[in-house]
Structures are given as C-alpha cells and as structure tokens.
Length: 36
Image (cartoon, rainbow, N blue to C red; front, side):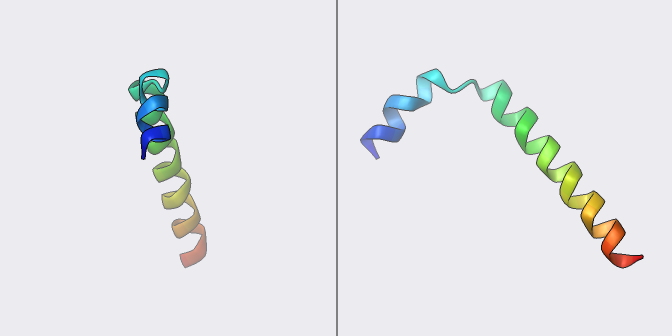
C-alpha cells in the first residue's frame, strides 16, 4: 500500500481518465464485433 501511495502524486489523474475512456471504447468495440 505504501508504494502505491508514493506513486500516486506522480500519476496524472487526467491520464488515468483518458486511459479508462480508451479502454471502455475498445471494450464496446469488441462486444459489437462479438455480436456480429
């Protein structure tokens, strides 16, 4: 836990949200292709 707390200040929250949004878009894309 201490290591994570140490890394948090260096990790940009904006980058995290962009990564999450991109991951969700890829996930939806895979689901759509999986249905076809």
